[in-house]
Length: 284
Image (tube, rainbow, N blue to C red; front, side, top):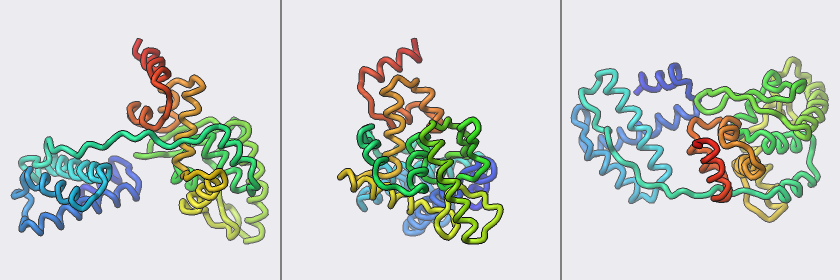
């Protein structure tokens, strides 16, 4: 397992959070195998995966989580087989439970305007404007450093899932909000006697804001319009509003940093008519 986790980090460039999730999934399966009196990998058979999946379902683990766990195990056993640690791959062909496709929650442009008109600090306004203008994930936003933002050409450069680089244009309202915030940021740094700070978004103590802070902030904005929303809701809305205004699906795919265009379709909420138009525009 240690070799596999090193492979995920070094060769595939996955984030520490993703690697930790893989590790937890694999350890949980090993614990299950021990309960089945399996102590050697050569004794693992396909039926063990079926029993394990059934146990997860009996524990009312949601289908999407089970699918992720099974995907972790498939990757691990494929690696073992490729490295000849196993002569066969017992996970080959195992199936995951069907995950119902749910359309993501989005908010309207009117809701976006209402939230922007609330009494926001320069930090809050910059965070919200940047989320909506770029569709960044929370982890991407809180991890931004000064060198990631170019206010001369108004672009943001980030590294998403799998360390995939993407450069996203920054609209004028978002760029102005960031500029206003950066001026106030200088005051915060001086008060805390901090020099050469590269992190973009910092709190009153000069430390990087957390993902939890962003979640709480966005949730409070949602309460103001009597809706339950998260930062991912803003990401969905970003993609949806672009598509509704005629953006090409491939462009939105690049902006979101999706490896597969099918994922982009699931992250958006557009009419069947619009999806048909995009499909034939791509496939002729």
